[in-house]
Image 1 (tube, rainbow, N blue to C red):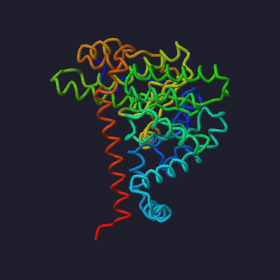
Image 2 (cartoon, rainbow, N blue to C red):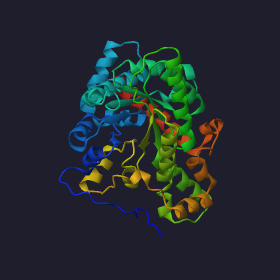
Image 3 (tube, helix red, strand yellow):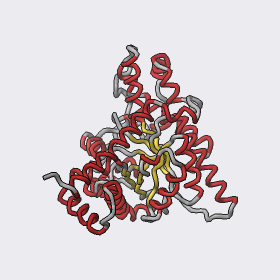
Image 4 (tube, rainbow, N blue to C red):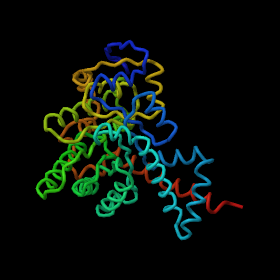
Length: 370
């Protein structure tokens, strides 16, 4: 039986961080799942990170944890924009945080010709029902720095916005994305956008498009489902669900020649780093995961992406719940089903809640209680 993290690994012996070795020896890129300036500086200089991300949860956390910087800065923004509400001021802070992180990544952006060195900046989740509003905000964000890549949810409305924004020259990163069906639909939308640009004679360039699969959140959803339905399954198998989905998505992207890369996010175990080494894709763990991987010298195999998840684990997951097939299979869901998938609902609500918390944080700064 395969335990939670049982896998065969080739130990790489070197005095340098293992993540740096991995990025040097394979095409796999390491991005940092935070725009915190201190974490990002370390991730770049010590661990070989060549990208980063920001979303409402990350932005709220960064601002909340660094009050010496952000309390006076938000007060300055409020004085400079006397009619701006708390939401507008909060998003000004998000933009500033993102632009500063993008500047840290600019050398990697220039060195890679635009393929890496990207700062992912997420559109306001409150716009998730409005295609045109998502597109307009994406275009605005893309103009903030040359290496901004814009995150739009992989919902039915969001995928329509992704295609239009990509056509208009925005570098895309899909978010709120947990299944192979979603990432393939996004990959196809980006292909349509690039083909439309070519047909209309628009300039070709390296957009650095990536398509996120939040592997750990798929794991979380399946764990919740089997608990809800009182299904008994080796708990270690549930740690492989997101890994299996990513490997399947990566295989489809390679076979179809998509001009975007799969990006792995929402880490829950070290397999979500080690099992993807060797692939032309992005792994984006939170800073603490990267630090722990290096502090523990967690080994990797340079060709791990080509190894399939053991068939008996995949079979057990299929037997446990039909939700696994919905997440793992290319035809597991139709685009009309994306919005009601359990992980989509839960994550979108989390992002909306973070927006509300950011509003409240700004409110407490500009209208402090007596």
